Structures are given as C-alpha cells and as structure tokens.
Amino acid sequence: MASDLENSLFFTEQAASGKRIVRDLPKLDLESYANNYDGPTKIMRLQVIATTCPPLALEAFRMAITELMKGKDVQSYMEVAAEFQKLVPNEPLAQINTNWVSQQAQRNSTETNRLEHELKTYKNNLIKESIRMGQEDIGRHFFEIADYTNAFKALSRMREYCTTSKQIAQMTLKLLRVCIFSQNWTVVHSYQQKVLTLQMTDEEKAKYDPILAACAGLAHLKQDHYLEAATSFLSVHHSFITPEPQAGINFQREVISPNDVAVYGGLCALAVMDRDTLQRRVLENTAFRPILETEPHIRRALTMFCSSKYSGCLNILESYMADYLIDLHLQDHFVKLYRLVRAKCIVQWCSAFSKVTFAEIEKAFPSKLVDGGKIQGELERMVMNGQLDARIDLVDKLLVSPNPDQRISVIQDTLKMAKDHEKALRLRLHKINLQAAGLIVKGQNGNNNSNMYESSGGDAGGNSDFPFNLRGNGGRPKRGNMLGGFHTMV
Image 1 (cartoon, rainbow, N blue to C red):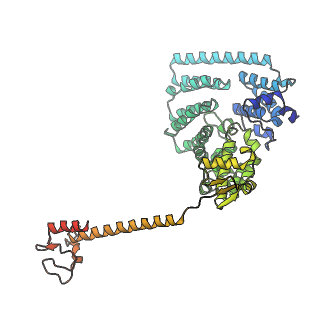
Image 2 (image 1 turned 90 degrees about the vertical axis):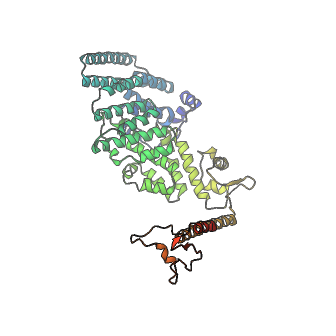
C-alpha cells in the first residue's frame, strides 16, 4: 500500500513542487507523537507528515481531519480534506462535510459579531479592564479560526488598557504565539526583549525566561541563525519540562515541546560548536542536561563527537533522518545541519594525516545524503568554502594537507624575541637615566632614592662612580647635563 501511495499522483505533484518525500518509515509512533501537542501545532505537524511521508500519510490525514472537525478552523479543514481526496478519492473522511462547513462558518460569524458588539459596549462604558478583556476575547477567537492578522491587531490594542507589568507580559506572550504561527520571526525577537525588560519578581521571571528562550531559539532556527539558536536553546532551564500554562497558553504543548528543544538545541550546537564548547556548554550544563535526557540519542551523538567517534555520531543522525525530515520546524534545516556536522567530522579526522586517499575518507564517512555519495564533490566544496585547509590531487585521488616551512616559523619567533629584548633594554636604560637625573618620586622621609646609585666615597658635589656625571652645583641636577644624558641615551 505504501509503495502505491509513493507512486500516486498526489506525491508525484508534491515532489515536482520541490518538497522532499520521505520514503523510509520513521522510528516515531504517530499516535504517541501527536499526543504531545495540542491546537494548531498538532494539526500542522500531522499535515506535514501526511504530505511528505507516504508510509504514514493515511493515518496522519485521518488524525488531522478528525482534529480539525473538533475546532473552528474551516479553511484549514477544507484544504486538508482536498489534499486527502487527491491521495485517496474513495476515503469517507476525504469527502468534504459541507454541512459541518456551513454550520461552523455560521457559528464563527455569529461569535465574531457578538464579541465585537460586547467590545463596543465596553468602550462606551469606559471601563479599562473590561475593554482589555474584550480585546483579549476577540483576539482569542480570531486565533482559534486561524485569522492570525486580526488576532494580532486585536491583541495589540490591549496594550493601552494594561495597567500592570504582569498584564503586559501576558499580552506579549499571546502576541508571541500569534507571531510564531504567522511565521513573523523577526517580530518574535522584539517581543522577547520587551518581556525581558519588564519589572517582574524573580519568581515570575523564572516562569517566563524558559518560554522566551525556547521561542527565541525557534525563531533563530527558522532564520538559519544556528549559533544564536543553539545559544537560546541551551539557556532553557529544565523547569520547562513541567508543563505550566502562562497567560492561558501551554507553550510546551501548543508551540514547542521539551523534546523539540533537546533535538533542535543539540543539533544546532553540534553543527556550530567545537568539542570543548560542546563538553562545557551542553554535556556539563546542569540546567539543560535534564532536557537533553529526553532525547538520549542526541546525547549519545554529542558524546561520540566529543570522544572523536565521528562515524558513530553521523550514524546516529542518519538513523533518525526520516524523523527529522518530517518535523514541522526541522525539515528544511536538517540537511544543512547534517552537512555542517559532517564537515566538522571530516576536518577533525583528516587533521591526523598529511596525505589521505579519497577511498579511505569515503570508507570512514559513507553517506548518500551529501553530493550523491561522492566524496570528491564534497571535499571540493569544503576546500572552496574554506572549511578544509588542504589541496586536492585529482590525479592520484589524494587529499594533501599543507606542510608549512618550519624554518620560517623559527625565524619569525627569533625576530619577535629580539624585538622584545630590545624593548626591555631600552626601557631599563630610560629608567636608569631618569634616576640619575633626579627625576624620581621622593619617599615619605624626603630623601632622594637616587642616592642608592652614589658610591660611598663620593664627595658633597655629587661625584660618584655612575657612568654619567650628571650631578653638580651642590647636589642639584644640572639641566644641561640632564638633557644631554637623554640625548645620549636616545
């Protein structure tokens, strides 16, 4: 049945439109996976699986349509049902339920009119708290029917009616969720900063900070900012594991789960951080470690990379490739992240050799995911991008590491050492000249510390065994001799 679906007209059109079709069966259990989410996130994830993974397409479509008919989003229901009908025309759930569509559309319109009328009444009464709650109710309604533009407008109007920092923070979290579902990733960062600048108690900050860090990491990931994404995800405290609604929103189920934070954070860190940083900021991070334990295979991949077991690290990532390619947020980024991790592994492995053949590299790092399994094209791209400091011998099929001339480095070190010694000697001579000229700070007893340079047999006129006879005139320094001494030293 799965092979028939792969060759169906629906998946042929999906592949022609540029979507990656995942033909391997993922490791995840679809029902358990879907039960980790609620609301639009659950539907969107099921829709991605249904349109990209033929082995799970039928089950995912059925679950998505069943979930949609429990909500108010008529437009999404019609789109998913139409796609399901293209795949399996005779499926009962694939037939659009026109009665439900018309009735739900009517209920949505009636609810919209009622909430707008109530809001107008509140504004006439000039009660700020009632107006704020009215804007919140209509914003929630627009969000439930997937009208994210009007939901954002309604929630934004709450700002002038908020009177406490807590109300502003809750409003901002609601706007943050709307921006994520409308994929307005730039605005996500601005709202995150607004919440961080509010005056709140330490207890309130401890509740908001993990949510804000997870949302910021997701926004960075969607914008291909992998280092910033890794930094944000790794700053999520392990209290994020316990679902606790904030501002009436359970972010762990409606936006991003702790398992997602572990996978996204681990992969981004593995792609952009070196071994020492991974060991210190990921594996030894006590605040993030409980979240990382929710995905043990990611922890094993990180441990293997830090232990220089590069093949084992890449094998783990490839074994879960099907799961990541059907993930809502990771499907467009996994191949990029995998290539970055693989390039780091190849660079570290090749650093131990002055020359190595293409066959040996391909044997150590086999993959059909990069450049069709041809290692030569991958190495050429790495050299051109500056990731690999080496030369390619196409005649003998060798990768040759640069062999720097040791004599040049020795000469450069010698010249640097000579300059350092010359600078030190000049400073010492200047100090001696200043002390001989009497240009020194006197001690608390008023004695001149320059007497230490005078011999015990010197006369009152200042004669001494010092090489420069700069003292005279009753022990006072002679200006001409002092200047002459400086000129002599220079």
